[in-house]
Amino acid sequence: LLADTAYLVEILLSSAEVNQRDIDAALTSLSAAGVTAEISKEDALVLLSAIPRIDTTIVRTLQSEAAAAATAIATAEAAETDTVATESAAAVLETDAAAAEKIAVDLATEATNLDNEAAVAATLVPPPLF
Image 1 (tube, rainbow, N blue to C red):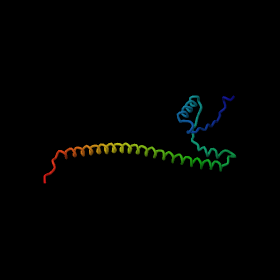
Image 2 (tube, rainbow, N blue to C red):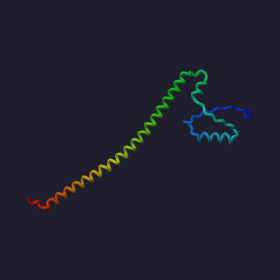
Image 3 (spheres, helix red, strand yellow):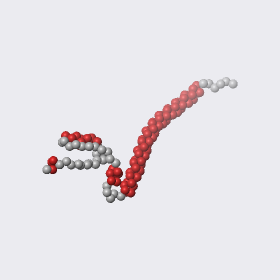
Image 4 (cartoon, rainbow, N blue to C red):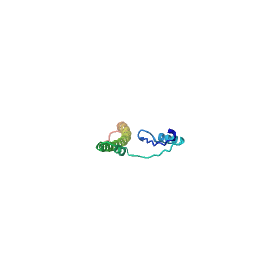
């Protein structure tokens, strides 16, 4: 008797909790078993509001807090992206500074060598006659 009865079963899944590949695999399995499945996207807060005796004030507060959290997450992700870009730019600048420092040291060494050579050359030139 139960096998000849049609049933309506609703299953709510969160895309944050279940990946799409697993959902597609489940739908394929149901279809292979002869079960007709329909997919719809629902707003969880709208569904909560439809439940009898659920305080809509609490649902609105939850919705407001969820929106604030989503904004905070987006802001944090943008800040993290900026931080990574700044760190990358700083690394390039550090490399450039190290190269400039090496060039400065090389130039200072060359200047010292030239000063030494000039001093030696000065000892080889006789003083001017007056």
